[in-house]
Image (cartoon, rainbow, N blue to C red; front, side, top):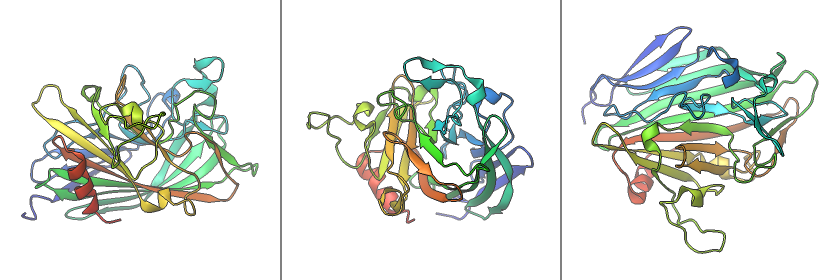
Length: 326
């Protein structure tokens, strides 16, 4: 493999976005948009879109008509001490989803401590403030985003995403992280880092390293993403066939080892995953139970997303992830 084949170009439009481009193909692989969105109801926060494979196939969705607040790959918090940093309607037990704009929070981009562009990777270190709807600053975040391991032979590259969040509430109250499931809606534990796929990923195939078991204890099929909803595991993959082009793409979602360590992680993580009626995956940090972050304290998580051309199977996914050390 020549150095030109895996080299990257980085274009930073100050105040707007950072774009990573494949020097070999001219394809914009990754756009990190930090300019505030115009609609506060969608919970203003940075996001990644468009997200493309090395061959240029689109693997992220932006403002789909079913959930306008879904924007590619983004850090979220659907239920946080009565506020919604996910965007859109709020789930209220016994009443369903309601438009409650006074509950919608935002994440303010405060600046980059580093934008380090090498020949074959990008490293961003960003400072953000989480602000509740009334304007009070609730948390400070140090975010890391790294694009790396471009491999034309396998048709894949990796994105590492880290969060270090500190409770800075002036009233010294704990921040309580939950989800619609902790609020009373069964199997809707979405929160945390979320990916929304393009429309043609609807009905895609989802699988993990182990065959999941259904509630009765029998083996469930990989072709039923619902079998993985609410489960735990080191990684999950989503593969689908595109419209317009004769091609498949695969995304791999992986936890850093400490995320699944009961001693290291602030709370257990579970998968939120759907292929129908919409394609989406979230690393849910509060699926079934709330957790509290006391004033002045910090939690940390690290995640990896591998973007690949082709319809990968379990063995190929496992082998590629093993090749990428943490």
